[in-house]
Image (cartoon, rainbow, N blue to C red):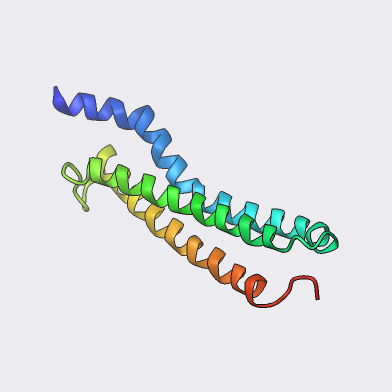
Length: 124
C-alpha cells in the first residue's frame, strides 16, 4: 500500500516538481541572456548599469531554486531508488540528480557571464 501512495505522488505533483527543477536553470539562463541583452542600451542611456547585475542575480536565484527543488525531490526518492532499476522511482532519482547538476552548472555559467558586466562597463 505504501508503494502505491509514492507512485501516485511521482505521477502527479512529484512529476511537476521534477520537471520544474529540471527546467528552472535553462529558463533562468535564457532569460538572463535575453533580458540582459535587451536592457543594455536602455540601462546605458539612463546610467542604470546595475540593472544588468540585478537580472543576473535573479537568474542565479532562479537556478538555485531549481537546484534546491531538485535536492528536495532527491531526498524524497533516495531511499526507494535503485541505480540499476527501471522503475518510476529510479527514473525520478536520476532526473533529480541531473536537475541538480544542470542547475548548478548553469548557475556557474550565469555568474561567469555576469563578471564582465561587473568588472567592465557594458556601455563602452
